[in-house]
Amino acid sequence: MQAAIHPVGDAGALQAWLSRVPVTRDFPADFTVTMRELGSVFLIETTTARGCVPCGDIWGKLSTLGRRYGWQVRTISRQDAVVRSGHFGLPWVGHPVVWVRPIGDEVRMVPVAMGTDHAANLARNLYLAAKILTGVKPAVGVRAMSKFTGIVGLPATSPGKD
Image 1 (cartoon, rainbow, N blue to C red):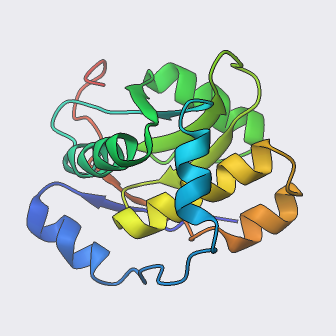
Image 2: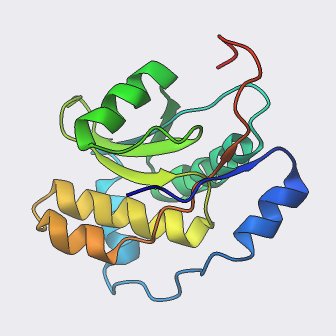
């Protein structure tokens, strides 16, 4: 299976691809309460790269969600993300890739985005990742997640840029 990847290098191209992505409109009744309760338990980790337009876009959205619900947001290295992707059998598609994991547990994690996305879709995927990590069957949670967009930054033009 091959992932649909949409590398973008400017805000116009990013918005053109995002305009094609459906926005989550339905949220579970316990969404806000759960997100706030679990903010002290989980950590959002994302990759980034210099000049990566989708990285800046998703960072702003994750930062806003983090402040709203009390979740920490931090960056991880490309190398860590590649290892994680391989662990899950996911292709490395480029930056950004976002993961949720319990604070203090570097083994259990759930990918929530490959490429940037709408804030509502990211929020729902964060919620579902937390549910998976607290006992919801993974198959159920993953089926309910918004599909990964694949809207990533352009590849670096020379080695070592990310």
